[in-house]
Image 1 (cartoon, rainbow, N blue to C red):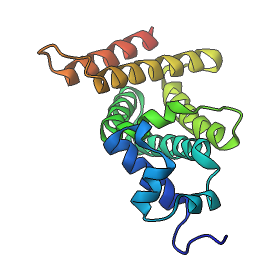
Image 2 (image 1 turned 120 degrees about the horizontal axis):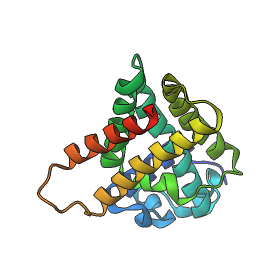
Image 3 (image 1 turned 90 degrees about the vertical axis):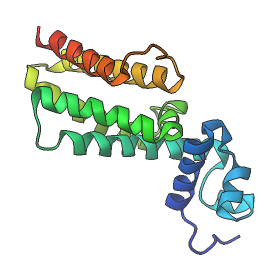
Image 4 (image 1 turned 135 degrees about the vertical axis):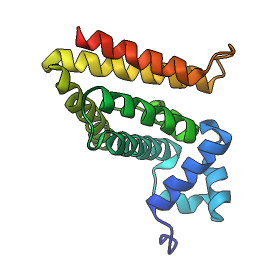
Length: 186
């Protein structure tokens, strides 16, 4: 069976990301995707290896999009300004793309070369920014993991409605980033 003209992997993944962002990652199935694209489900198999393949492609796309957000935010900045900008960009990405953001954690197979490459770009960007603080080697990796944990934890709790108090959630986020910055300066 030949691939449908105009249908490519990029179109498929973007459509899947739209479904995920509107209805949640679990709503992304081959049936819902084929309905959105107005095609028969078997047509998808010309481009992806079933639902697991689609989830992998979504993860790669999401990680690459996150990297784009972070790169643009850090461009032309250094030190605290770059870290704060990347933190804001991360949270903005998670807020604007909740399903795609979830996909970045759904199928993390670090043996997959595309996931590994996309993930390494994000890690290398953060490590590069953290070099301003004299962090090298293992310490840079530990700080990068810490920064990711802070950002992911905050974004995940916010997405699940876990910040119900009458305090400005953005002030809490800025406080958290500033606390991280104080820690890595020590």
